[in-house]
Length: 284
Length: 284
Image: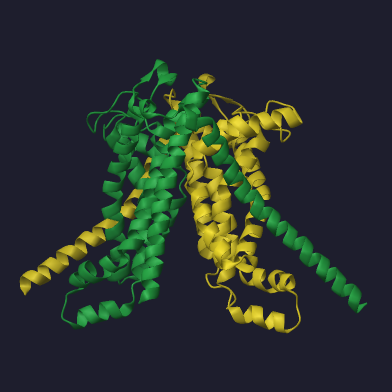
Protein backbone atom coordinates (compact mmCIF):
# COMPACT_ATOMS: atom_id res chain seq x y z
CA UNK A 1 0.00 0.00 0.00
CA UNK A 2 2.76 2.39 1.02
CA UNK A 3 4.67 1.27 -2.03
CA UNK A 4 1.79 2.08 -4.28
CA UNK A 5 1.39 5.51 -2.75
CA UNK A 6 5.10 6.19 -3.30
CA UNK A 7 4.72 5.10 -6.89
CA UNK A 8 1.78 7.44 -7.44
CA UNK A 9 3.79 10.28 -5.92
CA UNK A 10 6.71 9.50 -8.18
CA UNK A 11 4.50 9.48 -11.28
CA UNK A 12 2.92 12.78 -10.33
CA UNK A 13 6.34 14.34 -9.83
CA UNK A 14 7.46 13.12 -13.27
CA UNK A 15 4.37 14.60 -14.88
CA UNK A 16 4.86 17.86 -13.04
CA UNK A 17 8.48 17.84 -14.20
CA UNK A 18 7.39 17.58 -17.83
CA UNK A 19 5.02 20.51 -17.47
CA UNK A 20 7.77 22.54 -15.83
CA UNK A 21 10.16 21.71 -18.69
CA UNK A 22 7.70 23.32 -21.10
CA UNK A 23 7.87 26.66 -19.25
CA UNK A 24 11.57 26.26 -18.68
CA UNK A 25 12.15 26.14 -22.43
CA UNK A 26 10.25 29.39 -22.93
CA UNK A 27 12.31 30.92 -20.15
CA UNK A 28 15.58 29.63 -21.60
CA UNK A 29 14.74 30.94 -25.06
CA UNK A 30 13.96 34.37 -23.64
CA UNK A 31 17.07 34.35 -21.46
CA UNK A 32 19.56 33.19 -24.10
CA UNK A 33 18.30 35.40 -26.90
CA UNK A 34 18.03 38.37 -24.57
CA UNK A 35 21.46 37.94 -22.98
CA UNK A 36 23.12 37.71 -26.38
CA UNK A 37 21.21 40.66 -27.77
CA UNK A 38 21.31 42.90 -24.69
CA UNK A 39 24.72 44.57 -25.21
CA UNK A 40 23.57 45.97 -28.56
CA UNK A 41 20.16 47.02 -27.24
CA UNK A 42 21.68 48.85 -24.29
CA UNK A 43 24.76 50.15 -26.11
CA UNK A 44 23.14 51.37 -29.32
CA UNK A 45 19.54 51.62 -28.12
CA UNK A 46 17.73 54.15 -30.28
CA UNK A 47 20.30 54.12 -33.07
CA UNK A 48 19.73 50.36 -33.30
CA UNK A 49 15.96 50.67 -33.47
CA UNK A 50 15.72 53.79 -35.62
CA UNK A 51 19.02 53.78 -37.52
CA UNK A 52 18.37 53.64 -41.23
CA UNK A 53 21.71 52.16 -42.16
CA UNK A 54 22.64 48.49 -41.79
CA UNK A 55 26.34 48.05 -42.47
CA UNK A 56 27.45 45.28 -40.12
CA UNK A 57 30.98 45.11 -41.49
CA UNK A 58 31.46 48.78 -40.58
CA UNK A 59 29.84 48.23 -37.21
CA UNK A 60 26.72 50.24 -38.10
CA UNK A 61 23.58 48.43 -36.95
CA UNK A 62 20.31 50.16 -37.77
CA UNK A 63 17.37 47.78 -38.10
CA UNK A 64 14.75 50.37 -38.93
CA UNK A 65 14.50 49.30 -42.61
CA UNK A 66 13.92 45.72 -41.46
CA UNK A 67 11.28 46.76 -38.92
CA UNK A 68 9.48 48.74 -41.63
CA UNK A 69 9.94 45.85 -44.08
CA UNK A 70 8.41 43.37 -41.65
CA UNK A 71 5.57 45.79 -40.98
CA UNK A 72 4.80 46.45 -44.66
CA UNK A 73 4.89 42.85 -45.75
CA UNK A 74 2.79 41.71 -42.79
CA UNK A 75 0.16 44.38 -43.40
CA UNK A 76 0.19 43.49 -47.10
CA UNK A 77 -0.35 39.81 -46.32
CA UNK A 78 -3.24 40.68 -43.99
CA UNK A 79 -4.88 42.97 -46.55
CA UNK A 80 -4.82 40.18 -49.12
CA UNK A 81 -5.30 37.17 -46.85
CA UNK A 82 -7.85 38.25 -44.24
CA UNK A 83 -10.83 39.07 -46.52
CA UNK A 84 -10.30 35.98 -48.65
CA UNK A 85 -9.78 33.72 -45.62
CA UNK A 86 -12.79 35.13 -43.82
CA UNK A 87 -14.97 34.80 -46.91
CA UNK A 88 -13.87 31.20 -47.25
CA UNK A 89 -14.71 30.57 -43.60
CA UNK A 90 -18.16 32.13 -44.01
CA UNK A 91 -18.77 30.01 -47.09
CA UNK A 92 -17.68 26.80 -45.35
CA UNK A 93 -19.64 27.48 -42.18
CA UNK A 94 -22.82 28.88 -43.73
CA UNK A 95 -23.24 28.10 -47.40
CA UNK A 96 -21.27 24.99 -48.32
CA UNK A 97 -23.06 21.65 -48.43
CA UNK A 98 -21.83 19.34 -45.71
CA UNK A 99 -19.94 16.95 -47.97
CA UNK A 100 -18.08 19.83 -49.58
CA UNK A 101 -17.02 21.27 -46.23
CA UNK A 102 -15.81 17.83 -45.16
CA UNK A 103 -13.81 17.59 -48.36
CA UNK A 104 -12.27 21.01 -47.88
CA UNK A 105 -11.04 20.50 -44.34
CA UNK A 106 -8.20 18.10 -45.30
CA UNK A 107 -7.26 20.51 -48.07
CA UNK A 108 -6.87 23.35 -45.56
CA UNK A 109 -4.79 21.05 -43.39
CA UNK A 110 -2.63 20.30 -46.42
CA UNK A 111 -2.19 23.99 -47.14
CA UNK A 112 -0.96 24.35 -43.58
CA UNK A 113 1.38 21.37 -43.87
CA UNK A 114 3.26 22.50 -46.97
CA UNK A 115 6.77 23.52 -45.85
CA UNK A 116 7.53 27.22 -46.08
CA UNK A 117 10.47 26.60 -48.43
CA UNK A 118 8.04 25.06 -50.92
CA UNK A 119 5.91 28.22 -50.80
CA UNK A 120 9.09 30.23 -51.26
CA UNK A 121 10.18 28.05 -54.15
CA UNK A 122 6.80 28.42 -55.84
CA UNK A 123 7.11 32.17 -55.34
CA UNK A 124 10.54 32.22 -56.97
CA UNK A 125 9.64 30.16 -60.01
CA UNK A 126 6.09 31.42 -60.67
CA UNK A 127 5.21 34.60 -58.83
CA UNK A 128 8.45 36.57 -59.16
CA UNK A 129 8.75 36.14 -62.95
CA UNK A 130 5.04 36.93 -63.27
CA UNK A 131 5.40 40.20 -61.35
CA UNK A 132 8.53 41.10 -63.30
CA UNK A 133 6.80 40.56 -66.65
CA UNK A 134 3.46 42.14 -65.77
CA UNK A 135 4.43 45.10 -63.60
CA UNK A 136 8.11 45.58 -64.32
CA UNK A 137 10.86 45.88 -61.77
CA UNK A 138 12.95 43.09 -60.40
CA UNK A 139 10.11 40.78 -59.37
CA UNK A 140 11.58 40.10 -55.93
CA UNK A 141 9.41 42.58 -54.07
CA UNK A 142 7.06 43.62 -51.31
CA UNK A 143 4.21 42.45 -53.54
CA UNK A 144 5.66 38.96 -54.04
CA UNK A 145 6.32 38.66 -50.30
CA UNK A 146 2.82 39.80 -49.37
CA UNK A 147 1.16 37.37 -51.79
CA UNK A 148 3.19 34.38 -50.59
CA UNK A 149 2.57 35.26 -46.93
CA UNK A 150 -1.13 35.78 -47.65
CA UNK A 151 -1.28 32.21 -48.98
CA UNK A 152 0.53 30.95 -45.91
CA UNK A 153 -1.81 32.61 -43.39
CA UNK A 154 -4.97 31.36 -45.13
CA UNK A 155 -5.21 28.04 -43.21
CA UNK A 156 -4.96 29.82 -39.85
CA UNK A 157 -7.46 32.44 -40.93
CA UNK A 158 -9.94 29.93 -42.38
CA UNK A 159 -9.70 27.31 -39.62
CA UNK A 160 -10.10 29.61 -36.63
CA UNK A 161 -12.76 31.90 -38.09
CA UNK A 162 -14.80 28.94 -39.31
CA UNK A 163 -14.78 27.50 -35.79
CA UNK A 164 -15.78 30.89 -34.39
CA UNK A 165 -18.70 31.25 -36.80
CA UNK A 166 -19.85 27.70 -36.18
CA UNK A 167 -19.86 28.21 -32.43
CA UNK A 168 -22.37 31.08 -32.60
CA UNK A 169 -25.53 29.73 -30.95
CA UNK A 170 -28.14 28.58 -33.46
CA UNK A 171 -30.86 30.55 -31.75
CA UNK A 172 -29.17 33.82 -32.82
CA UNK A 173 -29.40 32.84 -36.44
CA UNK A 174 -32.94 31.53 -36.16
CA UNK A 175 -34.06 34.66 -34.35
CA UNK A 176 -32.68 36.89 -37.05
CA UNK A 177 -34.13 34.82 -39.90
CA UNK A 178 -37.50 34.72 -38.16
CA UNK A 179 -37.51 38.53 -38.12
CA UNK A 180 -37.36 38.46 -41.91
CA UNK A 181 -33.66 39.19 -42.40
CA UNK A 182 -31.99 37.62 -45.42
CA UNK A 183 -29.25 35.05 -44.97
CA UNK A 184 -26.50 37.57 -45.72
CA UNK A 185 -28.04 40.20 -43.44
CA UNK A 186 -28.08 37.59 -40.71
CA UNK A 187 -24.44 36.73 -41.29
CA UNK A 188 -23.28 40.33 -41.42
CA UNK A 189 -25.35 41.81 -38.64
CA UNK A 190 -25.68 38.84 -36.27
CA UNK A 191 -23.26 35.98 -36.88
CA UNK A 192 -20.07 37.92 -37.62
CA UNK A 193 -20.49 40.36 -34.71
CA UNK A 194 -21.16 37.41 -32.39
CA UNK A 195 -18.07 35.62 -33.68
CA UNK A 196 -16.01 38.81 -33.42
CA UNK A 197 -13.54 37.71 -30.78
CA UNK A 198 -12.78 34.44 -32.55
CA UNK A 199 -12.21 36.26 -35.81
CA UNK A 200 -9.97 38.78 -34.03
CA UNK A 201 -7.97 35.85 -32.66
CA UNK A 202 -7.62 34.46 -36.18
CA UNK A 203 -6.32 37.81 -37.45
CA UNK A 204 -3.85 38.18 -34.58
CA UNK A 205 -2.52 34.64 -35.03
CA UNK A 206 -2.18 35.23 -38.77
CA UNK A 207 -0.31 38.43 -38.02
CA UNK A 208 2.11 36.54 -35.80
CA UNK A 209 2.63 33.89 -38.44
CA UNK A 210 3.29 36.45 -41.16
CA UNK A 211 5.67 38.53 -39.07
CA UNK A 212 7.60 35.45 -37.96
CA UNK A 213 7.81 33.67 -41.29
CA UNK A 214 11.37 33.31 -42.49
CA UNK A 215 12.16 31.03 -45.41
CA UNK A 216 9.40 31.97 -47.84
CA UNK A 217 9.91 35.69 -47.38
CA UNK A 218 13.68 35.27 -47.56
CA UNK A 219 13.32 33.66 -50.97
CA UNK A 220 10.92 36.12 -52.63
CA UNK A 221 11.41 39.56 -51.06
CA UNK A 222 14.81 40.45 -52.51
CA UNK A 223 16.43 41.19 -49.12
CA UNK A 224 17.71 44.69 -49.82
CA UNK A 225 18.08 46.46 -46.47
CA UNK A 226 16.45 49.69 -47.62
CA UNK A 227 12.99 51.01 -46.81
CA UNK A 228 10.80 50.20 -49.83
CA UNK A 229 8.98 53.08 -51.50
CA UNK A 230 6.67 51.10 -53.78
CA UNK A 231 5.13 47.65 -53.71
CA UNK A 232 7.51 46.60 -56.48
CA UNK A 233 10.59 47.45 -54.38
CA UNK A 234 12.52 44.68 -52.65
CA UNK A 235 12.73 44.68 -48.87
CA UNK A 236 14.32 42.78 -46.01
CA UNK A 237 12.47 41.55 -42.92
CA UNK A 238 13.84 41.04 -39.40
CA UNK A 239 13.63 37.28 -39.80
CA UNK A 240 15.34 37.23 -43.20
CA UNK A 241 18.09 39.45 -41.81
CA UNK A 242 18.92 36.86 -39.17
CA UNK A 243 18.73 33.94 -41.61
CA UNK A 244 20.95 35.66 -44.16
CA UNK A 245 23.76 36.82 -41.92
CA UNK A 246 23.89 34.43 -38.97
CA UNK A 247 26.10 32.09 -40.98
CA UNK A 248 29.08 34.40 -41.17
CA UNK A 249 28.48 36.91 -38.36
CA UNK A 250 30.75 37.29 -35.36
CA UNK A 251 31.15 39.66 -32.43
CA UNK A 252 28.82 42.66 -32.36
CA UNK A 253 27.26 41.57 -35.63
CA UNK A 254 26.02 38.32 -34.03
CA UNK A 255 24.75 40.29 -31.05
CA UNK A 256 22.87 42.65 -33.36
CA UNK A 257 21.16 39.64 -34.95
CA UNK A 258 20.22 38.31 -31.53
CA UNK A 259 18.83 41.77 -30.75
CA UNK A 260 16.60 41.38 -33.85
CA UNK A 261 15.53 38.07 -32.29
CA UNK A 262 14.62 39.94 -29.11
CA UNK A 263 12.40 42.26 -31.17
CA UNK A 264 10.66 39.25 -32.75
CA UNK A 265 10.12 37.65 -29.34
CA UNK A 266 8.66 40.90 -28.00
CA UNK A 267 6.23 41.04 -30.95
CA UNK A 268 5.09 37.46 -30.24
CA UNK A 269 4.61 38.07 -26.53
CA UNK A 270 2.67 41.26 -27.22
CA UNK A 271 0.34 39.46 -29.64
CA UNK A 272 -0.06 36.52 -27.27
CA UNK A 273 -0.95 38.78 -24.37
CA UNK A 274 -3.48 40.52 -26.58
CA UNK A 275 -5.05 37.13 -27.37
CA UNK A 276 -5.42 36.42 -23.66
CA UNK A 277 -7.28 39.68 -23.21
CA UNK A 278 -9.86 38.81 -25.87
CA UNK A 279 -13.14 37.56 -24.38
CA UNK A 280 -13.31 33.79 -24.72
CA UNK A 281 -17.01 33.03 -25.27
CA UNK A 282 -18.95 34.36 -28.19
CA UNK A 283 -22.20 36.20 -27.71
CA UNK A 284 -22.74 35.72 -24.01
CA UNK B 1 -40.30 51.06 -52.35
CA UNK B 2 -40.72 47.64 -50.89
CA UNK B 3 -39.99 45.81 -54.11
CA UNK B 4 -37.03 48.16 -54.68
CA UNK B 5 -35.62 47.21 -51.31
CA UNK B 6 -36.14 43.57 -52.06
CA UNK B 7 -34.34 43.84 -55.38
CA UNK B 8 -31.37 45.53 -53.69
CA UNK B 9 -31.23 42.79 -51.06
CA UNK B 10 -31.42 40.17 -53.74
CA UNK B 11 -28.54 41.78 -55.67
CA UNK B 12 -26.52 42.13 -52.49
CA UNK B 13 -27.03 38.44 -51.77
CA UNK B 14 -25.82 37.53 -55.25
CA UNK B 15 -22.76 39.81 -55.09
CA UNK B 16 -21.81 38.43 -51.69
CA UNK B 17 -22.19 34.86 -52.85
CA UNK B 18 -20.06 35.69 -55.86
CA UNK B 19 -17.28 36.98 -53.62
CA UNK B 20 -17.52 33.92 -51.37
CA UNK B 21 -17.25 31.55 -54.32
CA UNK B 22 -14.40 33.61 -55.71
CA UNK B 23 -12.52 33.32 -52.40
CA UNK B 24 -12.93 29.57 -52.24
CA UNK B 25 -11.70 29.37 -55.80
CA UNK B 26 -8.65 31.52 -55.01
CA UNK B 27 -7.71 29.38 -52.01
CA UNK B 28 -8.04 26.01 -53.69
CA UNK B 29 -6.91 27.30 -57.05
CA UNK B 30 -3.60 28.36 -55.50
CA UNK B 31 -3.24 25.07 -53.65
CA UNK B 32 -3.93 23.25 -56.90
CA UNK B 33 -1.57 25.52 -58.84
CA UNK B 34 1.30 24.84 -56.43
CA UNK B 35 0.76 21.08 -56.65
CA UNK B 36 0.29 20.88 -60.38
CA UNK B 37 3.21 23.18 -61.15
CA UNK B 38 5.68 21.38 -58.91
CA UNK B 39 4.54 17.89 -59.87
CA UNK B 40 4.56 18.77 -63.56
CA UNK B 41 8.16 19.98 -63.46
CA UNK B 42 9.48 17.65 -60.81
CA UNK B 43 7.97 14.18 -61.08
CA UNK B 44 9.92 13.40 -64.25
CA UNK B 45 13.23 13.80 -62.44
CA UNK B 46 12.39 11.50 -59.57
CA UNK B 47 13.60 7.95 -59.78
CA UNK B 48 15.22 5.44 -57.50
CA UNK B 49 18.64 6.78 -58.32
CA UNK B 50 17.63 10.31 -57.28
CA UNK B 51 16.39 9.00 -53.94
CA UNK B 52 19.28 6.66 -53.21
CA UNK B 53 22.33 8.32 -54.76
CA UNK B 54 24.76 10.77 -53.23
CA UNK B 55 24.71 14.29 -54.59
CA UNK B 56 27.57 15.25 -56.89
CA UNK B 57 28.88 18.71 -57.58
CA UNK B 58 27.00 20.41 -54.65
CA UNK B 59 23.76 18.77 -55.71
CA UNK B 60 23.88 19.76 -59.36
CA UNK B 61 23.98 16.07 -60.23
CA UNK B 62 23.15 12.88 -58.41
CA UNK B 63 20.59 12.33 -55.68
CA UNK B 64 19.42 13.43 -52.26
CA UNK B 65 20.13 10.36 -50.16
CA UNK B 66 22.07 12.16 -47.39
CA UNK B 67 19.31 14.76 -47.06
CA UNK B 68 16.69 12.01 -46.70
CA UNK B 69 18.73 10.31 -43.98
CA UNK B 70 19.40 13.68 -42.34
CA UNK B 71 15.71 14.61 -42.31
CA UNK B 72 14.79 11.19 -40.90
CA UNK B 73 17.37 11.41 -38.12
CA UNK B 74 16.43 14.98 -37.13
CA UNK B 75 12.70 14.22 -37.10
CA UNK B 76 13.16 10.95 -35.21
CA UNK B 77 15.14 12.67 -32.47
CA UNK B 78 12.67 15.56 -32.28
CA UNK B 79 9.71 13.19 -31.93
CA UNK B 80 11.52 10.96 -29.44
CA UNK B 81 11.98 13.96 -27.16
CA UNK B 82 8.83 16.00 -27.77
CA UNK B 83 6.23 13.20 -27.81
CA UNK B 84 6.73 11.77 -24.29
CA UNK B 85 7.40 15.21 -22.85
CA UNK B 86 4.28 16.64 -24.49
CA UNK B 87 2.02 13.77 -23.47
CA UNK B 88 3.21 13.81 -19.86
CA UNK B 89 2.93 17.60 -19.57
CA UNK B 90 -0.58 17.59 -21.04
CA UNK B 91 -1.60 14.73 -18.76
CA UNK B 92 -0.40 16.68 -15.76
CA UNK B 93 -2.28 19.80 -16.81
CA UNK B 94 -5.57 17.96 -17.36
CA UNK B 95 -5.57 15.16 -14.84
CA UNK B 96 -3.38 16.24 -11.95
CA UNK B 97 -2.84 19.96 -11.69
CA UNK B 98 -4.89 21.58 -8.94
CA UNK B 99 -3.45 25.07 -8.97
CA UNK B 100 -5.29 27.19 -11.50
CA UNK B 101 -2.48 29.71 -11.57
CA UNK B 102 0.11 27.05 -12.45
CA UNK B 103 -2.07 25.77 -15.28
CA UNK B 104 -2.51 29.30 -16.60
CA UNK B 105 1.22 29.96 -16.50
CA UNK B 106 2.02 26.74 -18.35
CA UNK B 107 -0.68 27.40 -20.96
CA UNK B 108 0.64 30.92 -21.49
CA UNK B 109 4.11 29.47 -21.90
CA UNK B 110 2.90 26.86 -24.36
CA UNK B 111 1.01 29.46 -26.41
CA UNK B 112 4.05 31.71 -26.46
CA UNK B 113 6.22 28.80 -27.54
CA UNK B 114 3.77 28.03 -30.35
CA UNK B 115 4.03 31.60 -31.59
CA UNK B 116 7.83 31.95 -31.46
CA UNK B 117 9.13 32.33 -35.04
CA UNK B 118 11.21 29.36 -36.15
CA UNK B 119 14.25 31.53 -36.81
CA UNK B 120 14.24 32.52 -33.13
CA UNK B 121 14.29 28.82 -32.23
CA UNK B 122 17.28 28.65 -34.55
CA UNK B 123 19.01 31.52 -32.73
CA UNK B 124 18.29 29.90 -29.39
CA UNK B 125 19.47 26.49 -30.54
CA UNK B 126 22.65 28.09 -31.81
CA UNK B 127 23.36 30.02 -28.60
CA UNK B 128 22.27 27.31 -26.17
CA UNK B 129 22.91 23.92 -27.79
CA UNK B 130 25.62 24.61 -30.34
CA UNK B 131 27.75 27.03 -28.31
CA UNK B 132 26.76 26.84 -24.63
CA UNK B 133 26.30 23.05 -24.40
CA UNK B 134 29.06 22.48 -26.94
CA UNK B 135 27.02 20.15 -29.17
CA UNK B 136 28.36 21.90 -32.29
CA UNK B 137 26.43 21.65 -35.56
CA UNK B 138 24.91 18.23 -35.16
CA UNK B 139 21.81 16.10 -35.33
CA UNK B 140 21.63 16.43 -31.55
CA UNK B 141 21.48 20.24 -31.68
CA UNK B 142 19.09 20.31 -34.65
CA UNK B 143 16.84 17.55 -33.33
CA UNK B 144 16.52 19.15 -29.90
CA UNK B 145 15.76 22.54 -31.46
CA UNK B 146 13.01 20.90 -33.53
CA UNK B 147 11.74 19.14 -30.41
CA UNK B 148 11.33 22.46 -28.59
CA UNK B 149 9.55 23.83 -31.62
CA UNK B 150 6.97 21.03 -31.90
CA UNK B 151 6.47 20.59 -28.15
CA UNK B 152 3.53 23.02 -27.97
CA UNK B 153 1.76 21.09 -30.75
CA UNK B 154 2.10 17.74 -29.01
CA UNK B 155 0.95 19.29 -25.74
CA UNK B 156 -2.09 20.93 -27.33
CA UNK B 157 -3.09 17.85 -29.32
CA UNK B 158 -2.85 15.64 -26.23
CA UNK B 159 -4.84 18.13 -24.17
CA UNK B 160 -7.63 18.19 -26.76
CA UNK B 161 -7.67 14.40 -26.96
CA UNK B 162 -7.72 13.94 -23.18
CA UNK B 163 -10.47 16.52 -22.75
CA UNK B 164 -12.62 14.58 -25.21
CA UNK B 165 -12.52 11.43 -23.06
CA UNK B 166 -15.88 11.23 -21.23
CA UNK B 167 -15.82 11.78 -17.47
CA UNK B 168 -17.70 8.56 -16.88
CA UNK B 169 -14.66 6.57 -17.98
CA UNK B 170 -12.58 8.06 -15.20
CA UNK B 171 -15.34 7.77 -12.62
CA UNK B 172 -15.96 4.12 -13.47
CA UNK B 173 -12.26 3.33 -13.21
CA UNK B 174 -11.80 5.21 -9.94
CA UNK B 175 -14.89 3.63 -8.42
CA UNK B 176 -13.44 0.20 -9.17
CA UNK B 177 -10.60 1.14 -6.86
CA UNK B 178 -8.00 2.02 -9.46
CA UNK B 179 -5.50 4.68 -8.47
CA UNK B 180 -5.30 7.92 -10.35
CA UNK B 181 -2.26 6.85 -12.38
CA UNK B 182 -3.84 3.48 -13.19
CA UNK B 183 -6.91 5.33 -14.44
CA UNK B 184 -4.81 7.68 -16.55
CA UNK B 185 -2.49 5.04 -17.95
CA UNK B 186 -5.05 2.29 -18.61
CA UNK B 187 -8.25 4.21 -19.36
CA UNK B 188 -7.78 7.86 -20.26
CA UNK B 189 -4.65 7.72 -22.40
CA UNK B 190 -5.71 4.63 -24.42
CA UNK B 191 -9.06 6.30 -25.16
CA UNK B 192 -7.22 9.42 -26.26
CA UNK B 193 -4.67 7.59 -28.41
CA UNK B 194 -6.05 8.38 -31.90
CA UNK B 195 -6.19 12.08 -31.07
CA UNK B 196 -2.68 12.06 -29.64
CA UNK B 197 -1.44 10.16 -32.68
CA UNK B 198 -2.98 12.69 -35.05
CA UNK B 199 -1.21 15.49 -33.21
CA UNK B 200 2.10 13.64 -33.24
CA UNK B 201 1.85 12.95 -36.97
CA UNK B 202 1.09 16.60 -37.74
CA UNK B 203 4.03 17.59 -35.54
CA UNK B 204 6.15 15.18 -37.56
CA UNK B 205 5.14 16.99 -40.72
CA UNK B 206 6.02 20.32 -39.15
CA UNK B 207 9.45 19.07 -38.12
CA UNK B 208 10.14 17.49 -41.51
CA UNK B 209 9.33 20.72 -43.35
CA UNK B 210 11.23 23.07 -41.07
CA UNK B 211 14.24 24.96 -42.32
CA UNK B 212 14.97 28.14 -40.38
CA UNK B 213 15.30 26.41 -37.00
CA UNK B 214 17.93 23.94 -38.16
CA UNK B 215 19.98 26.13 -40.51
CA UNK B 216 22.36 27.12 -37.73
CA UNK B 217 21.94 24.11 -35.49
CA UNK B 218 22.24 21.03 -37.70
CA UNK B 219 24.57 22.48 -40.31
CA UNK B 220 24.37 21.76 -44.00
CA UNK B 221 26.80 18.89 -44.52
CA UNK B 222 26.14 16.77 -47.58
CA UNK B 223 27.55 13.56 -46.09
CA UNK B 224 25.43 10.82 -44.56
CA UNK B 225 25.51 11.27 -40.78
CA UNK B 226 26.75 8.23 -38.87
CA UNK B 227 26.37 9.49 -35.31
CA UNK B 228 24.16 11.84 -33.40
CA UNK B 229 27.07 14.29 -33.16
CA UNK B 230 27.45 14.53 -36.95
CA UNK B 231 26.11 17.51 -38.85
CA UNK B 232 23.34 16.86 -41.38
CA UNK B 233 21.35 18.61 -44.06
CA UNK B 234 17.58 18.23 -44.18
CA UNK B 235 15.44 18.11 -47.33
CA UNK B 236 13.92 21.59 -46.99
CA UNK B 237 17.34 23.11 -46.37
CA UNK B 238 18.68 21.26 -49.40
CA UNK B 239 15.84 22.70 -51.49
CA UNK B 240 16.58 26.20 -50.17
CA UNK B 241 20.29 25.93 -50.98
CA UNK B 242 19.58 24.57 -54.48
CA UNK B 243 17.34 27.56 -55.21
CA UNK B 244 19.12 30.34 -53.34
CA UNK B 245 22.54 29.50 -54.73
CA UNK B 246 21.13 28.80 -58.17
CA UNK B 247 22.62 25.31 -58.24
CA UNK B 248 19.97 23.40 -60.15
CA UNK B 249 16.34 24.21 -60.78
CA UNK B 250 15.69 20.70 -62.04
CA UNK B 251 16.91 19.09 -58.81
CA UNK B 252 15.04 21.74 -56.83
CA UNK B 253 11.75 20.76 -58.48
CA UNK B 254 12.43 17.10 -57.80
CA UNK B 255 13.30 17.80 -54.15
CA UNK B 256 10.17 19.93 -53.73
CA UNK B 257 8.17 17.04 -55.18
CA UNK B 258 9.62 14.61 -52.64
CA UNK B 259 8.75 17.04 -49.83
CA UNK B 260 5.19 17.47 -51.05
CA UNK B 261 4.66 13.72 -51.40
CA UNK B 262 6.00 13.30 -47.86
CA UNK B 263 3.56 15.90 -46.53
CA UNK B 264 0.71 14.30 -48.53
CA UNK B 265 1.39 10.93 -46.92
CA UNK B 266 1.61 12.46 -43.46
CA UNK B 267 -1.61 14.42 -43.89
CA UNK B 268 -3.53 11.49 -45.33
CA UNK B 269 -2.53 9.45 -42.31
CA UNK B 270 -3.58 12.24 -39.95
CA UNK B 271 -6.92 12.75 -41.71
CA UNK B 272 -7.58 9.02 -41.62
CA UNK B 273 -6.89 8.89 -37.89
CA UNK B 274 -9.17 11.87 -37.32
CA UNK B 275 -11.96 10.02 -39.13
CA UNK B 276 -11.35 6.97 -36.96
CA UNK B 277 -11.57 9.15 -33.90
CA UNK B 278 -14.79 10.83 -34.94
CA UNK B 279 -16.35 7.49 -35.89
CA UNK B 280 -15.34 6.04 -32.54
CA UNK B 281 -16.90 8.91 -30.67
CA UNK B 282 -20.11 8.70 -32.66
CA UNK B 283 -20.28 4.95 -32.11
CA UNK B 284 -20.36 5.37 -28.35
